[in-house]
Every structure is written in C-alpha cells, then in structure tokens.
Image (tube, rainbow, N blue to C red; front, side, top):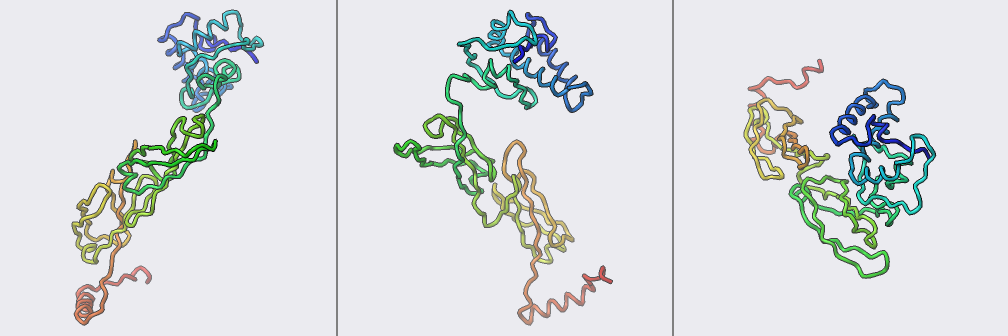
Length: 295
C-alpha cells in the first residue's frame, strides 16, 4: 500500500499546532465536501482530509505516526514494521459521520478500533426481546433478565435499566454483556398492546368519543394522557374524524412526540319513545341535509 503524508494532505508543517490543524481541516472540508464541491474527485479528497485530521488531532496517534513516518515520502510503498503496537486510544467515525479510514490507516490503527490486533473483535450477539408497557416506555423501567450461558455454565441474571422514551424496535447496547464477556448484548424493545393508545414512533393516538352536541357546540373534556388526565377544548363545529394535538404528550427523547386526539362522534340510540321524540324535534328544528354535495 502507499504511504500517506497526512501533513501534506492538510497543507501543514510537522510542527503545526492544534489551532493551525483545525483551521486547515475546516477550510479543506468546506472545499471538498461532496454535497457542495465541484472539485474533481471531491469525495476522495474529503475522505483523505478527514482521515488526516482524525490522526493528527489525537496526540497519541500523532506521536506514533510521527515516529513511524519520519523517513517516508507520500506515495512510497509501505508496510507497518513487525511488532508494530497500535496506540491504545481508538476512535470511531470521522467528522460528519463518514468512514474515511483507508487501508493505510487500518494497518496502523486497526480501522478505528481500540487495541486492534491485540484482543478479540467485539461480535454482535442476537438481540434479546424485552416487552414493556407503554407507561414503562414513557417513564423508564428496570428488568431482571435471566440469560443462558453459551458455554454450558449456569444461567445468570442481569439487571438492566431501560431509559425513558424508548420506542418499539429500538435496540439498547450493553457492552461486554454477551456470551463469555467477549461480545455486546443487545436488547430489542417491544411494546405491549395498550387498551387506549395506539403508538407511531414517538407519537401516540387516542380515539375520543364525543356526543353530537359536544362536537357541534364545543366542549371541555377530560382526556387521558401518559402524564395523567388533562382538559381538552373541543372547538365548535368539529366533525367526526377531526384531530387535535397535545404537543409533547407522546414519548420523550431529543424531540418528544405528541398525543393526537381523534374525535369520534357517537350517536345516541333512539331506543325509547322519548329519544325518538327528541330526534324528531331535532330534525324539525334543523333543516340539515348531509347529502347536499351529492346533488
């Protein structure tokens, strides 16, 4: 593979300080960002700039790179020397969430993982389904999980904290809690059916029955939410299927969901003489034809 001169990529001297590196990185990242740049091979240049900055901004990795590369020139064929020790501090993705790591980088720093080549790579185990109620998803909860031992040893019990605001299908990572301690354990959240609310991501929906006069005249009605009952104002002339929003009354998170109240106008039964008489008076008092638009 070819040796990469990270200083040359950023247009820096080897003695450049942190301020100079940051300034050079920002200038070049703007210049080559694939979303805005018209430069040829902008994406490749952008990744190279990210990689160079990821190494040089880290004091330990910069020191190791300087020691290793003092006698190399950009483009020369390169192999990491025998017994090369990867610096202990690793880091994840580069700026902007992209993965800029090249083969050259991987040979030196283990593809962005700490202690690459020194210990078994973390493997992802099959997620364990954990079913919780909607109320528990709203407030957070704890579970004692009984987990089998893949090596044939005794089962173990693990107490886990499920944070507030989780949604159905979300996975929670427990580092090192997989089989034998060499893998991560993932919990997959499943929400139980709720008798009142329907869930969509972080939003919840409630079908709210209302009487015809409440929909027509407007009303103030107590409505259940996950935080407790609140008073909701029904606007006059509301129709069946009208939807009202209670902002922030859904599941929490960086952007909390809302509760949507869908009005369902219920018609009282005409099952007594008094009820039929009331409907007859209503029909005579209001000359209303719901099928006018069909004419």
